[in-house]
Image (tube, rainbow, N blue to C red):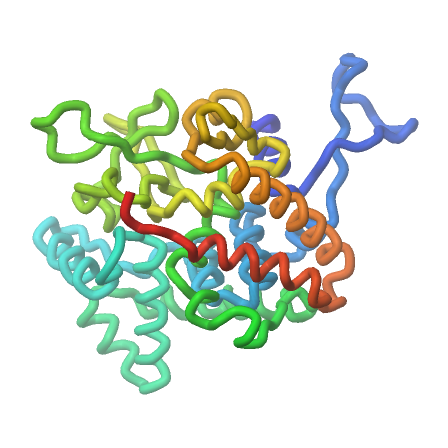
Length: 353
């Protein structure tokens, strides 16, 4: 448990290796026992009312100009889903049909996270028009859960604005369309959820209808409770071959819940640490991560583009550290240009393979 906690803290950038104080207590007899210290980013995460992974996506959403959809998803994952799941099988099927029809994106791959955001936006509109109760009943949603999610979102905003972490961009710097695009939202979700990543590949045989879902050697399935369940046919032929998820559970099989499909650009910019992005010129590919991850987190990228992306990632890491050290200091034009470059790369996606 301690090892997993440290791994999560390191993956989110909340801690880093440091120098052990002379008077520090030793927990083992190992002379080479690693000592970790909290980072400026970790100090910012500690002030947010959620776990560090969700806190990281909340921070990034603020840094990139206030991507509200990400705050909504983080607040929902902090609490629980507002989508009703009745005990009766027939009613549960009715609820799912309504959720799929009203909440899933009309174009592009399915996403539990985007469905949660769409549900919140519709509920908030109904709340303003004083018809929240009737709206929730008709759409198989939970009004009380939405109210709690709204309170958590407000807590996020209060903390972020108190720190001065929310940046603003003129429309000439980043368009609202690009800032709030599906690609931007899912990329920022990945930034917090990594290394919770899976991949979708061609079916094992020509007779199989659905593609193969895996994380390295581990075979996965979409949980029946996910709105993505039964809706991934053909995605292996597009660029949305990567999946970030919040929950993985094992019963008869290993299932994913709360998932979003995303293009490789997101993984190239937010996957692992910048120094784990390895360029393979002969294969014209890039791998992300360490250990077994780098063997399946592999994407086809021209060496020159890969080198530029790695340089951009190092620039972003420096910017993030400076911002976390002094959150109330607005970014200067040069620093903002790094974020605009990130948004441009994220949205320069050819959705076809």
